[in-house]
Every structure is written in C-alpha cells, then in structure tokens.
Length: 608
Image 1 (spheres, rainbow, N blue to C red):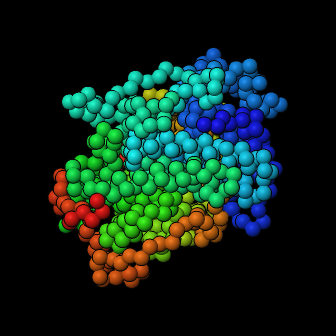
Image 2 (cartoon, rainbow, N blue to C red):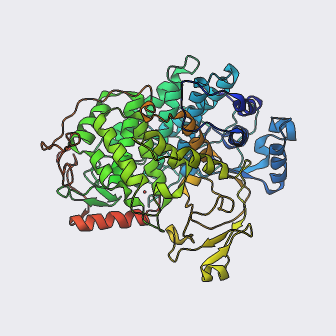
C-alpha cells in the first residue's frame, strides 16, 4: 500500500482555501473563510493522524502526556509536518485507535467526504498537485475497503479491519497491542459459541499484516456501500487512478450483494447478512419482513419495515451502480421494486424511527445513509418519486419533534438538500451554522457536564458557559440518557466521535484524550459543496439506467403505476418461515418498539 505524504496532505488542506468555485455549478454550500479554515484544520487532522493506519477514519487516542504537543502542532502553521515539528512519528504519540466496531458506518460516511473532495477539486480547477493528494487519499481509502469487503472471504463483509504491519518498510506499526484472534471453529462448531464480534485472522489469501472484526451489521454494511459508491464515482474514469482499485470496489460490493440475494434457511428470507463462520450476523436483517432480526412478519400481512426497505434498496442499488452486474440489477428492479415494491414500503413507514425523546439517532443516521445512497444512484422515475415522498414526509417533516427539520444537523440537511424534490428554504444557512458550531481541530473531547444532580432534580441546568439555561425533558432519551427539551446549543453540546449518530438533545459529556476523527464534519461539508441546488444534477454522472420491470399487482396507483393501497405488494419473494408476528397491529407495534429499543442505530425463492 502506498504511503501518503504528510506535508503534501497539509498543503492540500491549506491550498483549498484559495480554490475558486466553478462558475457552472451552484453548490448548496459555498464556504466562507471561517468554514474553509475549519475544514482545512480537519483535513490536516485527517491526514496527519486519523486515517494514518489504513486510510479509513478512526478514533485517535492520544497519550495524555502528548496532548499538549499535538495541540501545539495545530496552533501553528509554519511547519505542516508533525514529525518535522515534534521530532516524533505520529504513532509515537498515540495509545492506539478505536471504533473498529463502527468502522463501516463512521468511515463509510467519512469516505463520502474523501470522494466528494476529489470531485470538488476537479470541478473547481484545483492545482494538479492538490488533486493528486486528494486522489491518493481516495485510493488509500478504496484499498482499505477492499480489505474490509474481502478479508473474510468472497461476499463476506467485515465489521472493522486493523492493519498491524507498518505502512512503509522500517516504519513503525500502528500503536496498541495486537488483539487476540479467535478461530472460526474449534472442530465442534463455530466460535464463539454465542455469536458476537471477535477478531479473526484473514480467511482470504493476500492480507498478511491485517486482522478483521466479524459480526457486521446493517448499519456497517450500509455505510460501506455508500462510501464505496462515492469513491468509485470519484476514481472511475480517472486516468491516474489505479484500475485495480476501481475494479475491486465493484467486484467486492457485487459479491456482497449476491450473497444477500441468497435465501437464508433460518428464516426463509433473503437480504440477510452471513458471516465467515457460516452463521448469520447478530444484526443481519435488511429484509423488510423482519421487524427485528428474530421477528418475521407473516407474508400474508401487508405491513413491512420501511426502514429496512430503504436500507436494502440502498445497498443493492449501490452494488448495481458500481458493478453493473445484470443479475444484481434484475434483482433490484424486477424483485425489490416490481415484485415487492420496497419503495412504497419505504415511503409509508420508515419515519417510525422518530419517537420523541427516546429517538435513537443511530437509526436516523442509518436512514440518512440509505436515502443518500438511493439519491446518488437511482434513475427510475417511480423509485425517485417514492424517495422524494420519503424525504418530505418520513424524514424532514413528520408529526414528531425529533425529525430532521427540528434537529439542524448538517449531514441530514445536506442529504435532504441534495435529493429532495423541493428542499425547504434556508438549508445553506443551517448547514453552515451546524458545521461552524462543531469544535475546531484537534477535536479532543471536552468536559460538557452541563447538569449536576441538583439541577437534574429541578429540571433546569446552567450550562458550562455560565450563561445558557437548559430545560430538561421529563422523560429520558435513548438508553436512558438525560436530554433537553430543545437541541443543546453547539457552544455547550457534548462532543461526539460521530456527531450525526449522537443525540443533539443530550446534555452531559466527559473530557478525554480521544481526538474525534472529523469524518462527520468532512462528509457533510463536502457533500454540500459537491451537490447542486438543482437536485436534478445530483445523481452520479455514472448512474446506470433503470432496467425494465412490471409490478406484480395489476391495479395501479394514480401517481406512477404502483400497486394500489392498502399496503402495496404483499409478496416478499421468500417462503414464510421464522417467528411470525400475528396480526397487522401487533406487527406495527413491534416495529415501533423494536426501533425504539434497537441496540444499533438496527413463495418460492426466485433469486438463489
């Protein structure tokens, strides 16, 4: 793997300050000087520390004795290289990296920023040297995603990957002790006996120096699919991008999609994620008939999990987008759209994730990933119509106080602005305010204990700035967290290693030596810069034409010839096995309850 040039990377971050915007584009976000400076600092952090291990974003744990030196490095600009500034390799000041267990989600979204940055620099005529550094970052990330999607064997996707060997001969290895590895089986059965994420040695050949974390989940594979889509878009057709890297992105995502197309005998359903040990992963469920992984709605009922429908559409359409495999394309259009009408399910109830104070914002982030992937890759008018309906009625404006219109999070706003048919006014200002409100790099988690026990009992807190008054909700947030009635102002909001998965109503957080990666900032920032105010221009220029399909039901809807209400197609394409949830009302209630409590954010088969 090629090693990146730290000084050149920092030069890229600073040079972006002077890149002109293309006159032919009308980006959602045209950054001003403060925002450009903040982005440059986050890119400096990205290239110097947070992607240094493999090219993917990770939490960076700085030694307590080295925090002051790292801050001093960011406080000056005369010396752009950390090793030249400090006399220490970046790995020498770190205790290690963390969040391998959320690498697919966090780093997948962050890869949108990496790919979109390269596209923005090309569009805006940046100097060739700056484009080359951005391309190198995209290539490193794409190579790492190849490890992620193939180290466990064909069609098996990791939960996280770790590079143990040095990036360059004679250089230091990534800091931190190597994890203990668990074999896939001990001869009597898969290990561990109770399924859970463990570190594994490579299953596939060619990955010496790497290890991988298994038991991936739908949030991780969805983030991976979105990130791979943007990197493929940025690198395909680029004469200076290695062809093997582009081809690997396509082959890996295609292989994963073909595994999802197989029916899992455990439930008689497809769209189930299987691991290298032969078992389904703990949170394997992408099929809309699954309310939770172990609860399956009877096929004859019309209720479907629209949240899963959106995620399944996103992953499979991404695979068809990058790979162009005709079997994957037919499965998507003939089966998921025509036979099962998953777009209709998505538009009907994916907004059940908004539950007031207990809303799990990991679920909001997951839905955002799905809608962003569909918006980037889809060309079919009917599916796009249902996407627009979902964005407007299930995502942006719902009867709930925690929907996207209320929370003012830049990533959500950028996705809505890019792919809604007619986005609400004021999005640019909201995105700018959200991004500027985030802490500056280096993004160490700060003390944000806004409420003490006495204030909690009183229901009102004086925040750490000594000025802001926070009124508390009478009910708890997701997982029992303490939350406010209104979003907590950025100046006193607890820091997060990934803001878009965190609750903006949460009031307390602790300081640490963790340097938050900044991939959340850069993804929202560059998506908004890469996207046009004219949403018809925001599909990928490489988006494939829709394949022909017909709806299984013959009575059309008025809007686009879809099956008539109630409930759309009752078919799932899979035999009805598993634990059926009896009755429409019971299924709906279980769906809402399951989404509230989700730990993560979480017929004869025709496509075997």
